[in-house]
Amino acid sequence: MRKLLIAVVLAAPLLASACNTIAGLGKDVGAVGDVVAKTAEEAK
Image 1 (cartoon, rainbow, N blue to C red):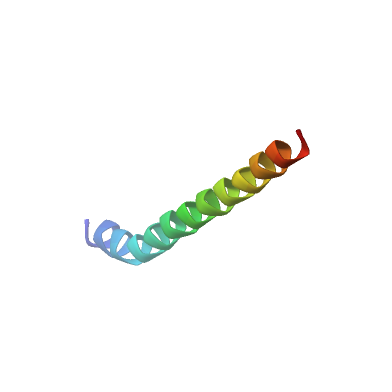
Image 2: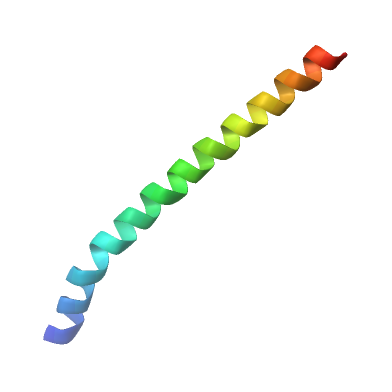
């Protein structure tokens, strides 16, 4: 049981940083989508 607790404590920061990375990736993809949409509107 103690080993499991240590593993969870060590893994928690890694999982939290992964969530932040995925959130940042989502923002970047959204920004690219906005640029593409704006360019398409200007090309009409």
